[in-house]
Amino acid sequence: MGKPGNRIGNQVEARLWATDSLVRVSSCFLILILCVLLVWGCGYRCFVGKLEPMPRAKQIAETRILDDGTVVYAKDRLEIGLRPLGDEELNRQFPEASSSGLLSANPYTYANWKPAGKKSTPQRFTVFLLKAKNYAYPKVRVDPLKMLIVAENGRKYFPLSFEQLKEYYVKYVIGYGGNAYELYERRKDILRKTLYPNDPEHQVIFSGQEQKGYVVFPKLDDDVHQVSVYLKGIVLRFDSWNRPVETLDLVFRFERKEIEKKR
Image 1 (cartoon, rainbow, N blue to C red):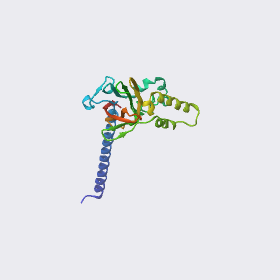
Image 2 (cartoon, one colour; image 1 turned 90 degrees about the horizontal axis):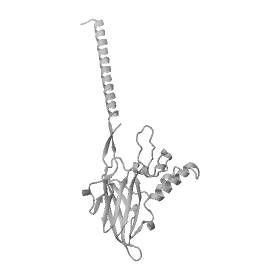
Image 3 (cartoon, rainbow, N blue to C red; image 1 turned 135 degrees about the vertical axis):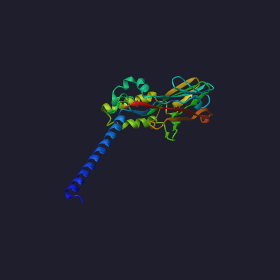
Image 4 (cartoon, rainbow, N blue to C red; image 1 turned 90 degrees about the vertical axis):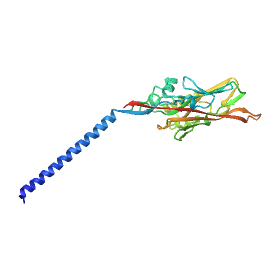
């Protein structure tokens, strides 16, 4: 049997060794976490790019894809085209209304505003340019509010009318005077001039005429990569009482790819 002093010394030494081992393990674990965070922070982050037409084979018959990204349906001298618009292009369309950050009058984007600590501007809406040319029928009618976006994961997005967009922006207005109300009126003015007509009377396109305008949807979720944009109820012929007797439904398909950007 060993002496009591030796036993106590051995116990103390064992405890010190265990404590030292625990400290070493904790230090290594902490270093590992720091290394992971460092690699993650210096790595890349995936972003979704802008919408582009899916290949011709994925589109419906009698469509073609133009160089500017427009998908055009053409039959009997009736043409209906749809093109997605990115925020940069929308800002270029309204340069004077896209240079004052959150106080910019551009109703389609956040203009040049960037959230604190961010290097990029968030997307506000999903916007398409809809064009229709009628050289085939006495008159046709295209209603943008009958459009629908269906994503590959089943999500659905419905178009926003002029009235809905007004309601979206009126929440920023306090009272009926001052800079906030003036900004609201400027945004409404741009919407009124550039949206595809919402009222049936101005949706009619007589023979030899053309119509175009923007169609606005909510921002797509980040996990959406492929969409089908449906345009339903295009009226090709009317009866004597101006009631539709022949209609057409179309679908345009677009996709966007992930882009790696350095953090």
